[in-house]
Image 1: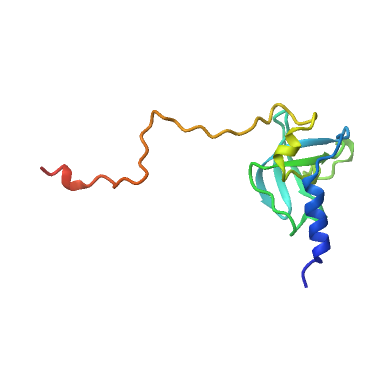
Image 2: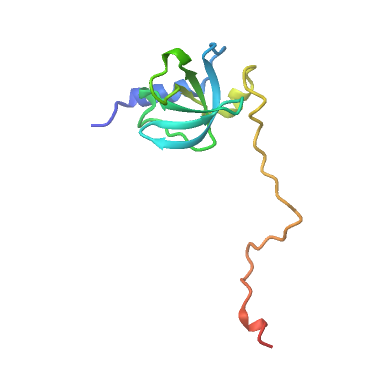
Length: 135
């Protein structure tokens, strides 16, 4: 049997609303790579990479894509056991709402895709044929 719908909805609803304030141990991070077994490599605003674990309530409920943002609770250095340095306590799903908060780091700029007009687009064109060179 799968998880009850109320658990899935509660986890999804919790991740849409950003908290009012962050604690001293919490930080926003950008997901770099999924390592497997609910472990993710993330980049903090100070460019430090950390290995964090996904909270059990989000496992098999919410998927995190590479380049997405998460709220990480870092473990104090004295309490570290192994390589895992913290836990993902929230997943940023509504990025526009989270960016309005005062604690959103300036190191995570809004990603804007710019098209280079200098390069010619090859969309919809036929590939060059060898018969043109044989003349």
